[in-house]
Image (cartoon, rainbow, N blue to C red; front, side, top):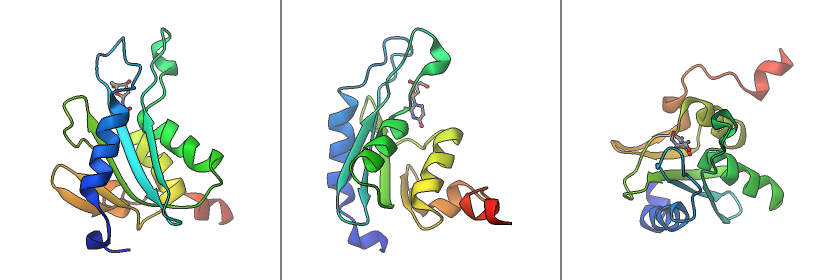
Length: 132
Ligand code: THU
């Protein structure tokens, strides 16, 4: 998959749409995430906060859950946006989640352009390390 194979505009619009469903009464910071899987599914997720703040689910958590509950597969292209619709970068924990389900080659949109996941999480710990 190369950067030009992806309809990034459609992916961003899907992320903006799902951000409007975010449950973020504590931070007031809605997030929407969208991704394509390797079998062409469009997956989305939004953040779901909790009165026990640390229990909050990031948008990427619900996106990864949608991937797995929808039959699994690999993520190939990903974006996430804030409530204003601007592209943001995934938090550290969510980079780890994305690594597990997309690996080094997952294409991630950032405010500075599209980069592979290997640039977002250098020297990542992942499934391969468990085999050593
Ligand atoms: N958030 C996400 O959903 N994904 C990220 O990658 C960054 C942070 C959410 C968590 C929390 O509900 C709000 O943004 C503020 O941190």
